[in-house]
Image (cartoon, rainbow, N blue to C red):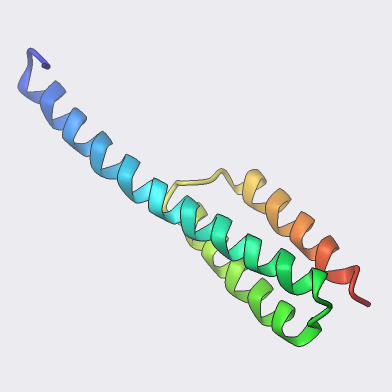
Length: 87
């Protein structure tokens, strides 16, 4: 239990952010999993659409401060290389 009002507020804010970050990261992981499945099944068109959706989710996560921009770039790069293996 925090002793100061400001510390209590920070605790509330951190809890809200933690929950928001968790849902965003979860959606990104699910989307990445779906992309990997599509690549393994060699469904190129669907995989490309999934990649676009995934990059959009990752970019939004960066703008909200969930991921650092370099982390996001690394994730997108790895998924793009995976997507290119279909060709």
